[in-house]
Amino acid sequence: MNERLAFQERWDVVVVSTIALLARSAVTIWAAARIPPTADGQFYHVIAGRIAKGLGYTWLWPDGVVTIAAHYPVGYPAILGAFYAVFGAHPWVAMMANALLGTVMAALVHAIAREGMNRPWALLAGIIAALHPAFVPYTAALMSDGAASTFCVAAVALTMATRRAKGKRQMPSAMALGIVLGLGALVRPQMLLCVPFLGWLASAFERNIRKRWLVVLAVGSLSLVTVMPWVVRNQVRMGHAGLSFNGGWNLLIGTDASAHGTYAPLQVPPSCRDVFDEAKKDHCFAKAARERIASDPRAWSSLIPQKLASTFDYCGAAVWYLHDANPTAFPYRAKLIGAGIETAAIRLLWIASVLAVARIKGPRPSMRAAGAVVSVIFFLTPHGWAGVVGLLFMMGLLGKKLATLPIAVPATAIVIGTTMLTHAAFFGAGRYAMMTLALIPSLIKSPTPRNEYDSPSDPWAKASMA
Image 1 (cartoon, rainbow, N blue to C red):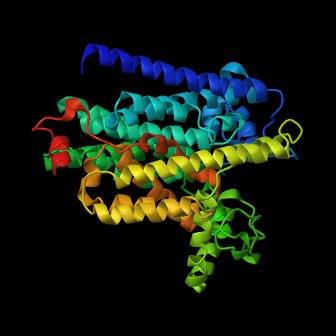
Image 2 (image 1 turned 60 degrees about the vertical axis):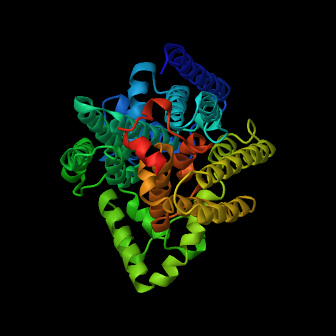
Image 3 (image 1 turned 90 degrees about the horizontal axis):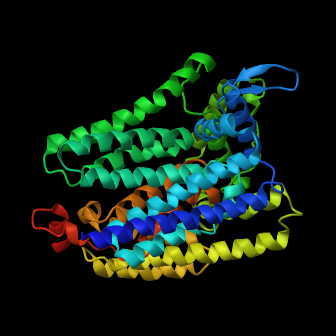
């Protein structure tokens, strides 16, 4: 890469980061006095305030009793708690933390896109991430999905760096990947499902099989080491090991046919009504859910399309949160307009990604082209989830070549696949798709190898010429 291009790319990072930070700062300035914490955001705000005071993840009940808690994952309130400890426990502080996380995410999306696109397209991808209508207004929401998306994108960027690293640089990069995956799992436990896949992908260009397994082992072991102190804390203090104690709740809600695949108030089974301990109650709910699934697996399986539809058809998390927090400042009409803009933008990005995968030079081009036609049709209807399934199917048709393509393609397949598995089992909601939405801008154009990788000794070049 010549020095002029390197300078231009560094400048592009500044441009993307500045746009992202300014957009999110504007939302923060507008929302600071208008949008109070609401729904799960109120819980995170209270827990973060207690963490900032050195009280840990604990809950103060109205009667003055304090209990050890871990209902939701600790990662996001811990991040907010660190900011609250320095700047005070104010919602605008959390919003600025969200703004910084979103800025990092946009810059990393640009880096990921740059691996497989030329400079103008990568800059466009970064700007899309910087101004994404699902993420920018969500800056005001004290919810964990934006942070989870940032950790997911960071893990993908480190996967890219690890498989490009040479010699002694590869192992530190793999260790950093493992730590980031572990930290991400403390925000969104689903990221543990990505560990073996991203670990294997990080070693995709390593020809020595022993070194390849060392990379996979480093990623896996460091991710477990990172989450283990919290798991041990929960075992010691609450009597059960786990990252959080809402999995049983969510699994039980996911068996409720009347919920139509999404969240509904939990119907407490008779066997759990006299269980009040947080961890024990969650385990009781999980047991009841497993019994219900085992008694009628077909009925439970029949809910999967509804769960995927709830996850991928429509996001709307930001406009819902803003309207729910303050209907006067963000009225229903604004919610409808925002939802329309967001949905149109997301569907266009999905379509662009489908077309990009269809145009990749590789195996089964005719089948991928047919899959693209079907997927695009679904994206033009209310049933967008079927288009996402089609995109994942098209990626699978690339076979072994998938692992050798620029990181945006195989990593997006991994995140889509693990998201589908997670919410097919539990229940769906649009905000749970945000990790996939964060990566999609890096896939708006068919990826091609960058010039510096085009050498006969590089496995990238061999894969691209296959």
